[in-house]
Image (cartoon, rainbow over all chains, first blue to last red; front, side, top):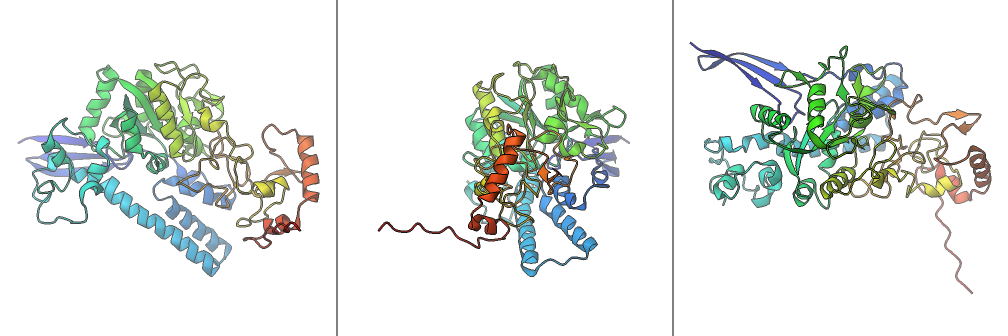
Length: 172
Length: 330
């Protein structure tokens, strides 16, 4: 009977500010803990300030979803003031928010999520390069090929370079 | 050259900004400059144990560290322990990691105003006791003492901005890689002079309104935002209107007042961001290097001389009065 603790961190894609601790016993996870090891105290920055400052401060909660933060702040301010946006203004605000949403889908998929599945460690997995093969990810469009610097390749090895492409089998 | 990028207490926006670098884009630029990215928490694939091994190798000297980029302020709280931010998986405060890695680095770059001066992370009563790498607000001496010099002899280079312009980061890295950023490179706040010697005011499209002090009264009006709406582009370091953002934009181009996000303590202007503090009707903060008496004299003269077109457009949300075409010569 063997038990051990796995500590996962720094965690990629979330600025490193996530730590996972797993307790493993007899090959099974018996307990899992998630820890967010960063406290900035952002919630305490606005009290006492001019309410309009929320539009400047809240987007800086997160550099990825800034517009969502400021859109929420704008709605809260409008709500507090009993104000209604002009129809065209409401449309523009929704367009801005929609654009961020669109950009974030692209960012999330290409930068924050899929790269981990493309790691060479998964080259032998069935789901990697199996039947499901999205045809539109041709050539240079995968994160692995667009961001070659970020992907540790074994020098001079064609095979290694194929392995970092998450389409792996049959793509070259 | 080896580059290690750490994200301490910030929002990650400076990395997102860097990804918007164009001509060249960030990966091409690093490759072209011969810079190898050892690790970046958002961009690299290597996780957990590999990173911890890498950091240990850097500390032991096994892997040379040419450039250490830190994005985000460093947290000293609670009570000086730094435990408000632990580098996950290591059981050690980020502050300790940054201090130790900085001691190994040939160059240390503070990416963004948080890393440079504390920035927004240190706003209000600074709940997490955030500080910049080598500055606490406008005062020299932050996590690292004022006398700190990285291996190559330079202090921490403050690529300040909230967020930073991708071009400011890429140019700084290129200059470091080329060995041309010397002691004369950074300004009095250790910001690279190639962008800090400009004012945001330079090439602001509202300059014609500024010339006549034809001022917007409310956001979304076309006029100059200095007199009423809190714009301090005439005092703010940055080439934002010369080197636009994302190919075309800037805050003032979009009708938002410059809040001098490249400056220490910009996060606490002591008034609403979009409101100009005044004394006897005159803005308290005057353009850089402008004597007050002259400013008042020029402002009253130029206000009196404001053409109708500029005066009307300044308080309109679109051009109401177009420029008159010149009469053809007889």
